[in-house]
Length: 93
Image (cartoon, rainbow, N blue to C red; front, side, top):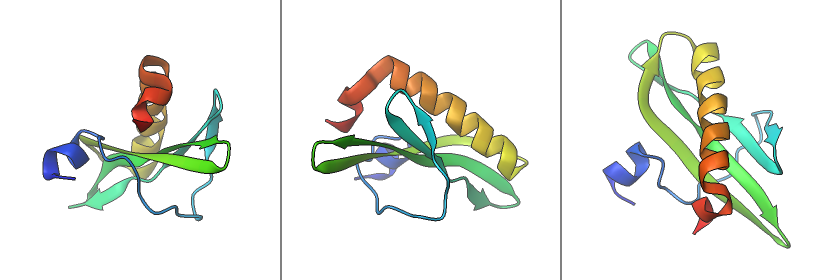
C-alpha cells in the first residue's frame, strides 16, 4: 500500500501485536496503538474481527497528532467506533 493508503487508514492488514489490551465494540476488537512522532502521538491502531477461521485486521492511522499518548488512545477508540458504525464489515474488503 502507498503513503496515502496508510495515512487515511486504508491499509487492510498488519501483523498482530499482543502487548495492547483491546476494547470490544459490537463484535470488533479495537487496539489503540499511538505512534510517537517528535514529542507528540499520531492516532493509530487496529480494528480486528473474527470471521469463522480467519481474523481480519484493518490498520487505522490518522494524520492527527496529540500531545499525550492517553489522549491519542482515547481519540483513536472514539474514531474507530464511528468508523465501525459507518462502514461495518466492508472495511475488510
